[in-house]
Amino acid sequence: MALLLLIEDEPGLRLTLTDRLTAEGFTVESRAEGLSGLEAARRAGYDLILLDVMLPGMDGFTICRTLRDEGVDTPILMLTARGQVDDRVAGLKIGADDYLPKPFHTPELVARIEALLRRARKDPLAETLRFGEIEIDAKAAIVRKNGQELVLSAKEYQLLRFLAQRRGEVVTRDVLLKEVWGYHSTPLTRTVDVHMTWLRQKLENDPSQPAYLITVRGMGYRFDG
Ligand code: CA
Image 1 (cartoon, rainbow, N blue to C red):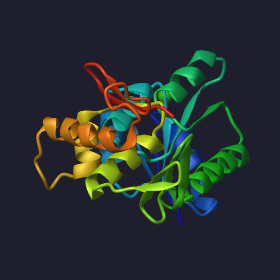
Image 2 (tube, rainbow, N blue to C red):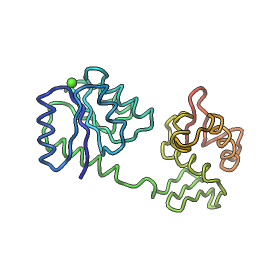
Image 3 (tube, rainbow, N blue to C red):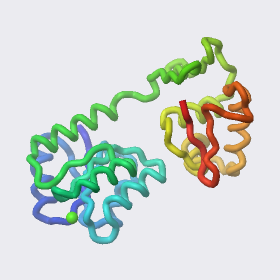
């Protein structure tokens, strides 16, 4: 059964939501304050985070942005006061998955939660990604260009897949190091650039004018396709 983290400072709402969601079969943990909420959200194991916007300590937008910057990809459903239309746009822009204005009815909240959980369960590792002449067969861990298999090292493949799954997003070198190389190794940021050069030589028609693996100056890399 799904484990939810509820970050909400209104005691009445926190209690009501915890009761109702528990009655729906979810396991709910809650935090009443932003900083402790962020700390809890960083831990792996939650299937979804319900995040209030106005919170003491740290607001919901900052929590959401911080989690996404750190590579935490737990689905986030933001809760906020009705009428704050801009909040919806702001929330989705910084990486929230959905938004629900207060007050809401529990069945609607449950429906949104279940939709997000279903979406998250789709195994991204089993997807085949296609970008024009490039095909990333994630099940077989093979990359083809115009139908021809490219010979990539494991790291080159992982780097490409990570970026391609986030098409159009800027990914920092730090995030790439953490997600592709992992915590156990301590490579230099330059490691990313070196692998990127090799990957471009194999993937791009003209490695000096990349069409897919774009350098975003001062920030990191972005996959265009
Ligand atoms: Ca609040």
